[in-house]
Length: 186
Image 1 (tube, helix red, strand yellow):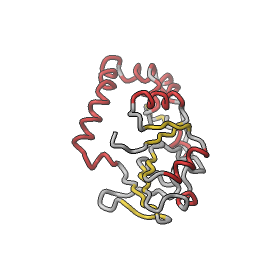
Image 2: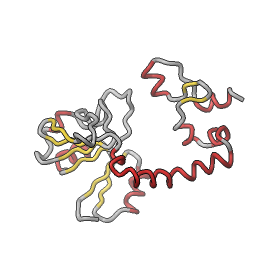
Image 3: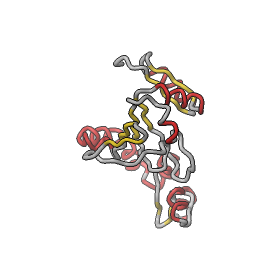
Image 4: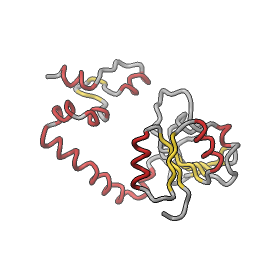
């Protein structure tokens, strides 16, 4: 709402439609493909990456070569800040030393950005997770995990069984589907 031309790219058309309906008119939504991403890379003053990147992926969305096509005053803010993630040149920084330059482009990739405002972040996190805690207290952990796919997505281990595929793949460990692990331990 401050007069900026904001563009949001996503591969989920429903999310793009929702964004169009709730955000101000200075927002443009674009389907995330190479053409639209390239256009945004070349025209943006600030590129913000919020993509949760698969740690087993081999490519990137923004490559080092792309930085040469960006405005010389552009900034990349990498909220996800995964090394070898969506932005090839991104590496986690800290609040004490938050920026660095690659190919002349300023990068800000502070791991856990909300910690700069810990009280506010805590209040927001508490308010957003309260409904989940109430669900667990009402139905119990096991029943909540059985019934709610979103809860299961957040599960790493259940009764000694590794239920997070990404970790199993990365460390070459046995992976057990979360629902299967829950049902096995009756």
